[in-house]
Image 1 (cartoon, rainbow, N blue to C red):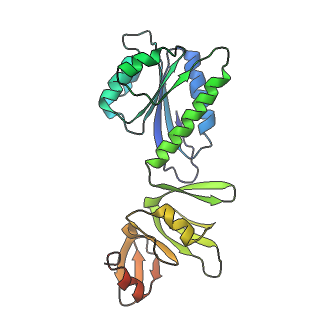
Image 2: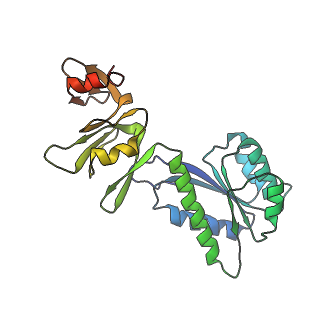
Image 3: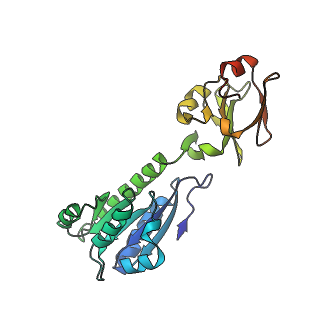
Length: 257
């Protein structure tokens, strides 16, 4: 199942693997996470399996990514249980997220002793099923936060709506003449007008390829096609042009080479 959860820019992506040998519980985990994530700014590919053998028929451990996440039942009734699978994963990937699903908190000692370093646990309590949902939502929120921290994504607000933009797709940001407090964002896909200022936005775009020290613009240096130092014309790969002063060009020789 692939959830396309970001209607504007599908820039934050991860894979979530659920491995649970109880079909009803596996279905519950998947549906709970799907319901929570479907309105969040992230694209998640969820795959579920009944045991480790099923998972390994489809995926090689060597192909697991840093941003992948696992929900593992501990007690599979197969040759490899959840702890064995997690140990094999950790041996190849020290960074992916591993959460154990168990009704036996005593298993944590074995997991620690085997050096697996899990991201956390989902403790199943048959008498309080609502606590499982709370734990799953907490995990989902952490996965979103971690994915954002490893991506070049920033957020802009339009009223109550959030839009998440890949910095690499930005061409430039410019102040709008005679519309104080509004900016126009040019991207490879579309232009967006939103309420903000260059001084407020610049700290969010503080990366080596962004020029953020201009009064009226923020420029993606990777998107610049050519510069005419005599006239001040800056042409971008998209064909869009702006004019900057000769003083700015002289003041920033490394940016306007």
